[in-house]
Amino acid sequence: MWRFLPSILLILSACADPDVAISNDDGSAADDWTGADGASEDSDGSDETGIDVPELGAEVDPPVAGTAWRVWLADVEVSEPPGGAALFDTLLEEDSLIFYVDWAGAQSFGMLVAVGVDGVQDLCEVPQELPTADFGDNPLFRIEHVDLTIDPSGTGVTARDATLMGILDGSGWSWGALRASLDSRDFQEDLDALGLDACELLEDLGSACVACDDGVETCMDLAIDGMTAEPYPGTFDPNAGDAC
Image (cartoon, rainbow, N blue to C red; front, side, top):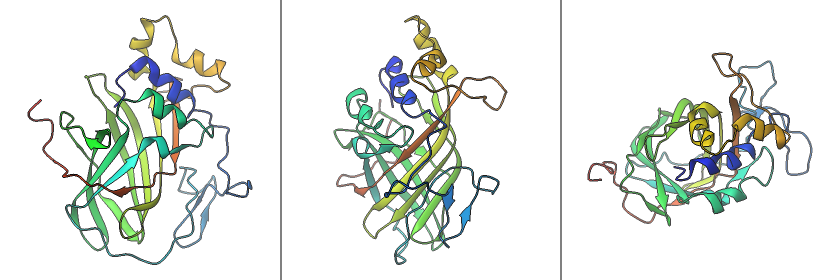
């Protein structure tokens, strides 16, 4: 997704402060996560994403296979810290994500995701298949434990163990959020050529790398909110990338 890998650190550093709490609109501290039934999970509960879900509205019809939605990256909110999402607009060649429903049932559905340039699917990028979306809490859907690979040129930057949630409103998403972990080792080689170290730069910005699953402190949190989606006006090609 990122064409200029050294620039990725600017985005990631704006997303990486684990000490910034998510707040409600009135500035009060939010629960770690408020479920569709109104129950909250605390820090010792089973949900550790830190996502505060808005109050759910009425149920909607399940999405129809072949439906596509578009998320504009300039409109998302990087909540750690607030305001970091503005960097998407200036540093990303791709300006959108396009989600495609390839099958659907009453309680779950499947999606592909592709990047867009000028709001149009990049036909040279192969769409990624996502794990099954749980739609049991209609209109809320939830996808867990997915590794989203950002790989425009074989670099292989991956948002690990990601959780993606969204609220469907009948035509698109009225709200969406993403939580994941990023390992700076994925792109440190690109920064080495510039004499830069990802974690040192994060420290300069008041944040810090945290331990990855293997215990090495090169990982950072990614927290994105405000992922509203509109109907995609084009034709989504699930087989894109084959001709490039």
